[in-house]
Every structure is written in C-alpha cells, then in structure tokens.
Image (cartoon, rainbow over all chains, first blue to last red; front, side, top):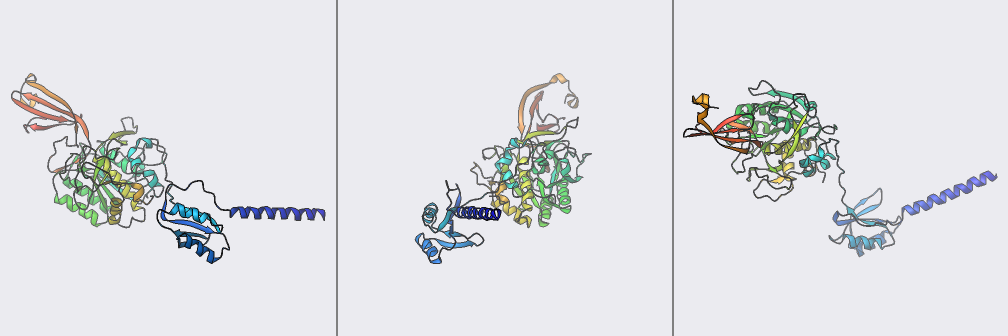
Length: 396
Length: 75
C-alpha cells in the first residue's frame, strides 16, 4: 500500500517535471544575434497556442505584417514585412506576449562535400569555382560520359584509369595512350578519380571518361581526326565533349561535326586559344560550342587568353595541377600546366555535374545553366563570366 | 643542318638562343589546316646562320621545328 502511494507520488512528480519541460519548450526564443544573411521582406512568427485570431490579426496590423504562408505542422507563419524592416519587425513581434517566437528568415546553405584527395589544397581552380559546395548537391553520375578528344589518356594512371570506359585512336600514333601528357592532364581536371585518397580531385567527380585520341604525340592533329572523334564520341553516348585544341582556320567539316554532336544532345566545350588576341579560334568560335577563356587566381584574364564577345565563359587556366602520364617505373605523376586547354575541362566537368541535376534535361538547358550562373568578373578584355559550379548546380 | 645544307659544321654559327613560352603545341608556327593542343609550352627559339642566311628553329625540348627564314631549311 505504502509502496503503491510512493509510486503514485513519483509519477505525479514526473508528470509535473515533464509538464514544466513542455512549458519551457514553448518559452520565447532568446536569439543572441540574427544570421548574417536572411530573406528580404519576410520574417517567421509563431503565436502561442490558443491565441485568439483577433489578437493575431491585431498583431499583424500593428506591424504591417501580411501572412504569406503557414507551416501547419508547427504553427509558424511566414510574414511579409516592409523590406529593410525585418529586424525591427522581429523585435516588435517579440514584445507581444502572445508571440512564442519571432525571427528573420535566415539563409540556409548546402554544407558541401570535401573529398579526401591529398592534393586538393593545391587545386586553386576548384576552390575558385566553389566545387566543394557544388559536390554537396551532386557528385555527378557514372552514367555521364565526358569525351576527352586529345592526345590520349594514360590508361594506367591510378588517379584516372578506372574512369576510362571507352577509347579509340584516330591518329597515326601507334597507341591510344598518351605519350604527350596533354590529354592526361586535361582528363584529370574534368574527372580524375575523386575521393580516393590519392592525388587530385576532378570537377566532374563521378562522371566517367571517353578517351578519343585525335591529336598525335606531338600535340597536333588534322581536321578529319578531330571530326571523326566528335562523331565517335556522339555515337557512343558522350554527354559532353571536351576539345582543348584549336586552330585559326575555319573548317566546314569540323563545324559540321560540332553541329552533329549538338543536334544529338551533346554539350561541346572548346578552348578559346592562347594567343592573347581577339582572332577567332576554331572549333571554339562555332555557335554550337562553348568557347572557354582562361582566368588566373585573381579572376583576371590570363595574359595569354584569347578574348572577344565570341568567348562564352571563363574558367581557371593558370598553374593548374592535374594528372600526368606515369614515369618509366610506373609511378603516377602530376604537373602544373597553363592554357585555355586547362580551362575547357573545368567547364566540361561542370557540364557533367549539371547533367545530373534538375537542369540536366537537354544540352541546351545544361549550357544555358552554366552560362547563366557565372560570376561576373572585371577583365581588361571580354572573356565572359567565370563559371561557378556551386551556383550552376543550385547549391547557392 | 650542316649535313642537309652540305656545308661544314664550322660554317654554321649560333646567333641567338632565347628561352620562350610558346602559346600552344604549334610552337608559334601553326599550319593553317591543323589543330593544336592549347597549352603553354616552354622551349627555345634558336637562331642559326650559314653565311648570309639565317634560320630560326623552335623547340620544346623534344621537337625541333623550322619556323622563320627559308622553309626548305633542314630539320
């Protein structure tokens, strides 16, 4: 009997404690300082349960507040207030005893994802385009193929190799492998194996690579090799084609090949050239290719980058660290290189990411998204805005 | 070069050796109907003379191209 009475008493105390805790949970929020960024012209307010509707309406009237939306499950209201008056409106609402809490509508950002590749701190270009923030939203997909039409790719490099799903040699070189170094470097920027605790990260993250060798081992090639590579990549599932190459003469064959790829839904990216001139470089200057100029660490035009209104976007292109063919002992190598050749694969890798987002419905949509989300930069000559991966995938 | 010109090596003199950064894989001597890797390429401009004729060779350390002067100059 006594034990039963004690049990009832303990239970009552517990109920009282829990009730007090519940009341405490409904105590007005104490906010030390508002977030640095918040929505303009709107705040969040929750009234105490049971507050008469007339008093709620009166509070809104006093504060010139208009209910935009009610978050039913928690009873919070999104209130429109005069822009610039958000903090004062919050203070006025908080002074109302019927208000449980009032706060600005703070900006929430994606957390991002930082891969474990040890050379990432040296990849200033990835930081500049806010790659880690972008990777918090998407890391692309192994279903997205980026064709690197270049001097080949070192198939045995352990920071590249698992990514190459298809290869073809269009040159007179005896091998599809990279004996020059350019193609392997470009491939790494676009989509090196990322978060593998080795070497560098590639912007395209989970995107995979196609190795189309269209430049000989001396770094040059013919129009027909490049055109053949574009057609091969298109017919074998490439969603993005990277062309870190160019010349100053127009080729109808090459333009036809670019148009062929574009008409079949491929995003075509090409280097604008390194001659510090406004003279058109092909294939970058073709309407269905994204022409990419180069920027440095300070978002200035690289001194060598070609320029003009025909250059669509800019991307990092000075002192870019990436993969380089293995040495004679089979050891993986990495090098710094500069050129619009290095800028183009940043855009190609980003296109791979965008294909994996809600904007990846067509090549038109992907291209528009990349170009619409650039960061404006102030340059001595026009080279477009510098790409921002985070903005392109909707991370900010 | 001496062999191709069929002259004694002593008749060829080095006029100038200039470190260069070429704008692309053409080493600054693009052929109009070819495509080139658009990467800055370190190398040298080498100016040689044989009698009154001058020949400029360009190199990236691996390849040697004749660029300015007599196009039939030996490589």
